[in-house]
Image (cartoon, rainbow over all chains, first blue to last red; front, top):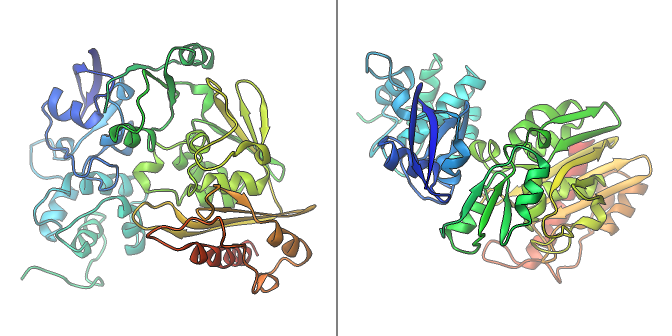
Length: 164
Length: 263
């Protein structure tokens, strides 16, 4: 076991890791940050997406030791300072962009990465960027609406698939 | 996965020494190696991460002449930075996997692994690129050695890849939507001396040059000139996603689409 130190959501944190410890296991089990989910564990589903040095990565396909010294942002870091939902999280709630919520941490983190590079994406750009995030509940339409809304764009032009 | 020792050297020289150890293996972006280790298809004693070596990262070039990509440069960085020199290469990189995979996966890792359906081998072979390692320079035509095999020796590390810039080029990828690899992809590059066509995802031998199409396109660079031409279905991959005949057919379709896109 070796000590790994990373800065998570602005706070320096340390824990013990083996060579084979995945970043997602380190976050969940060593640091107790269980907001990041393990979905498929095969790099397909994107539930485990976090930001490492500002880039969205699948934390089930990166070793904890590779993150030594890195700045990591998880879904726990997406809320506002007072603990209320951040803009992206609020948009997912407002537009019913989740049902069971299992994929949501990854969806929120991928959305944050997209909006950082492209503050006003088109519907096609949103769908292309979320290619690596799989949701089995929503059929994606409301997730796309939530991302549009989070970017401050009008969502009235999108097909309405609301839970009414 | 089985446990292993992990080292992350900051220089190439240290990495070479670490790789001389028993059952040591290099780790680039890990987007293929880590999943295969989880399945216990691979069990290195030591993993030598190459991502801490700054010299292996970056894109540099000379407009109209060549572009050199450091082996540990991610697909996302190639997509963002290589376009100024070689737009077709940047376009290919932008369509590998998904965004999170592109932020980790590297060109060197892709080439060393030589997955028969990977995108980069097609660009490297069609462009006639040069692969530079810690030991030598290897021409693309000599580098690939069949499915998941290359001429790289034990402990040899790819350091960079240099692409000559063609007059026109494009990559056409028929996406296998679950894996996001190419079910079949064609990279076409037109140089002053002739056209090169490389096909990925189709052959049991891995990436290959479709020489019949190259002769036709070198005479007339148009999709119409290729009408009716197909490589032999014999030796093509046949699996639940597509038969050998289907993949042979896709070679024609994707090559024509690449020619049209290259203009």
